[in-house]
Image (tube, rainbow, N blue to C red):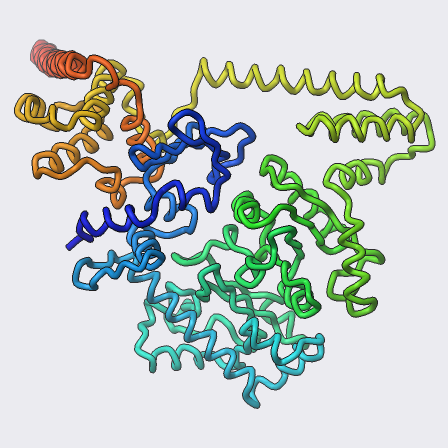
Length: 588
């Protein structure tokens, strides 16, 4: 049995959508609604709209929408049932276990989290046993204290092919569940073995304190055997591009600034040295999703990756990823090619803090890097550098920053400020023209894909428009349903998505239920929910609703008749063609 609607209604009542969303999005009132920058895609102009009157949200930029349950699920990476339970726990509402059945995905996630927790305990106990002495010696040799090791839950995977497998089996977990959790693997011969063996283990913990994955570092004298690092692959509870190592500890210490470093050991070492606002990406390039996550918790990001060429390329990729995030970003380059851990050990935490305080803005870093391989002493080099620098500043929306750095460039390299500003202006104008051309091309030849919410609308514009109007009117005037129940069954809708939505509305109103966006939450994607919210919050039903409804039903009837006629004509044509072919054959 599904979670009763009255329980869901109580959860939503106790978790006011404006209060919940304002924890993640800066909202500004615009009339009776509120707007803000969408947390689900990069944007500079607010297109995220909150409708307090009906308890829904919709983004005009990326098309997602829904209610407080949908928002919570998307922002916290939870499925629908998990988001209900999450908000129920926050508001002190108990959902009796017999009031719902967890769907299979929910069950799988719960089991994986249990397996991960048990595996983390197993690895930590091994670290503290004689079998894990080599790993404990390694960690303490890197300067970590026992309290730090325990704080991060570090462990050791034994040099054994099936030690964890046997341990988890004894705890009652199946091989299938262990495979889903990615703690064991299957050989070509069909046998099963531990994924992590003879490694220092770093559990990856999410913001809610659950172990969601592992990273295993090879024994220092055995790095070539299976690679230096083995990491958990993506699972139902873990997407590496959406999480950050150490963020479960850093989230409460990063209101002003977060430090992004390269590796797990850097994070642990910096935390131990007092920099408890440090995180790392998880074995992948820094992603847009990670940038969005950080922007919800801090005012500024300081990137402090390794000073070697690979590290500096990673800095440039991260800056490009963060370009439209709205998160102020600075860069620290550690002297002598060292990583943060090495620098602190050789110098002191105080000197590392001084480096952070002297960090470059993202523009300063880009301008400096642009001149590294150019002979700026020559006139040709100066001109080449000016073009590179102008391109960097033309990509910057902060006009005050552009004015500041163009003045510095002019003074430093002997150009007039007008010349620098003109170069920047020409590039900006060129970029603006390219953007307009792209927008025009997209408008003239829009790109459709299977991911469009209603791709059939392209070929059924009149029918789809009528369907949307009917849905919109019923949201605003559910009392009209009695007049159209018999005249408009769901099968009269022509486009599949609208037929499905109307079918759910039809069933709900027939059963006497109130129309609420939560009726759709479990069975629709965020984009589909966004589409429903756009119909619910649209203006189609504000005037002459009864007449609109009547006219739209007539349009649908005519469109259905046309479809039937077209189908009959097609069938008749096919029959006639078949008769002609048979006649020709007989003539032969």
